[in-house]
Length: 277
Image (cartoon, rainbow, N blue to C red; front, side, top):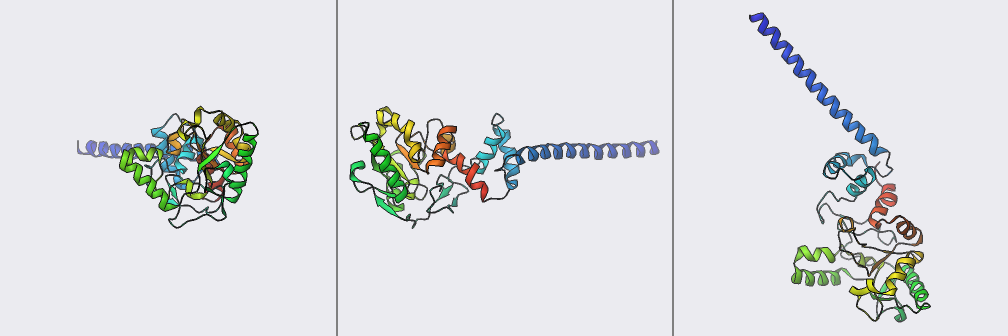
C-alpha cells in the first residue's frame, strides 16, 4: 500500500508539472501571437506590449491598429495622468493634449498679428499659420463669406485664468470636457484659431455657410478641425466646430482624406519615428 501511495504521489506531481508547462506554453503562445500581430504595425512599441494586451481585453472590438494607436496616446490612463512635456516646441506638427503639455514659460517663436481684416483685433499666430490663415480667409471673402479669428495664441497665464473661471462655474469635471488646463492648451502653440462669421457667436459657427466652406476647404490651407464630432474619446474634448489647428498642407490633407484626428496622425506618422520599436 505504501508503494502504491508513493507511486500515486509521484504520478500526481508529474501531472501537475506537465499541466503548468502546458499552461505556460499556451500563455507564451498567446503572447507570441499578440507580439507578432502588433509588430506588423510600424508604430508598435515593444515596451507597451502588456498594455496593448490589457487594452484589447477591455475593447475587444477595436482593430489592432487602433489598439496600438490609443495605447501609444496613453488613452489607457485617465486624462491628465502619466503626462510628459512636449519635445516638439516650435514645430508645426507639435501635439498638445491631455497627456502632453507645454512649459509654463513657453512662448512660440515668430508670433505675428493677424490682419484686422480677418480678426477682431490683436490676435497672434506663428508666422506660417498667420500667412496661411489670411490666405484662407481672403479666399472665403471672395465668395462673400466672412471667416474671422476671435481667439488665437494664449499665454499660459491667460489660459490658467480662463480655465479657473470655467471650473469655478461648472466644476472641474465638466470644465475639462471643453476647456484645457494651463499648459495643456493648443492655443499656447500659436497654431490655433477659434472662428466666427462676424454675425453669429462662435458657438453657432456650425450653422453657418462659413463652416460648410471650412469643411470643404480648410485643409487646402493647412488647417484641420481639431476636435471633430464623435472623437472626444480620443481628443478628450467635446466637439468644437469653431476650433481649427494649423498643421501644414500635407498633414491636413491626409487627416481630411482619412477622417482621423491629429492625435492619431501624430502617433502613426510622427511619434513612431522617434520612439523605440
